[in-house]
Length: 402
Image (tube, rainbow, N blue to C red):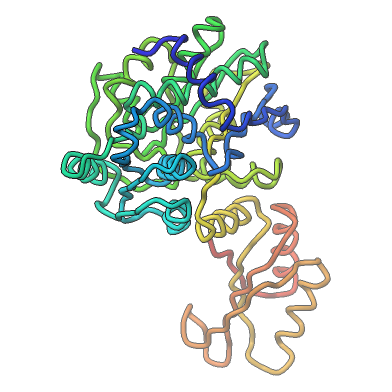
């Protein structure tokens, strides 16, 4: 098991090449949660995630012979980019095995940093097994994404930075995949400030560390898809589990919609882009999954490498959930000027039409009538209720499409 001295040594080793990420006070999230929230923004690292810390610490401890043979890693994206980027800076050959469903942005970024990329397997575990075979066959040094003491110590430097930047915090909230980040951070925080609470957060679809703690040993979960792909790990690490058992106060889970909402709020309220894994900790705090009220809380936003198409879907669904985007199906008599009368009501109530679609054959439309689906930008739930009341008063049959 790593010690505080290992993390301190890692900090001295990597500090010249790793950004000291900011930890600003968030007025918006403090008001929303009833706590004093400090966002530890490690999504501002060069490759967009905290994984650089552990990858670089491992690379800097390799022997000359190991460096000359090259390194290999398995990763869904962030560890891949960290290894690729820092291997390139040190002129070390790097091969990265990524699962087939890995977002294209992460694959492209990894290749852009100079690494060889092999796509293999349906998930991280299958990619890792293939990487292990490749390392044994070709002599590469395997850099594990989380279950390696040197990597864990590197990730733990985040914990040292948190207590240095916010020495009077009461709690730290950390996303969990395989446990490398929370293992290192919890060790650094608890050995420095024993009274500080450390909480972990996992997606409800893959709570591998929570299950491992309950069982007292790592257990392998069934494959599942989550928008928090960076922490979609089916089995907790055997080196990380003891650290979690010793230092972490509790682990909670968050649902997909909660993570998506946290991504949207971070973007809108703090102008901070977070991927699913990077927003998981904030999702837990926002949805009051933890016993925190009136506390000073450091929340890790540890990654920002999100696929832009997924982000677009999250934004649109978030707008629907907040009542700022609504779709109505309205029945009209099919004669010239009918649409003009309808749009007059919508314009009077300041609803902005963004999309329309007519249908004369489906949705129970009578002969001589038409149904029109109208998607509109609105100001919120009260504005939607105002629109519905105006349509009813105007004699229009309508329904909201959810």
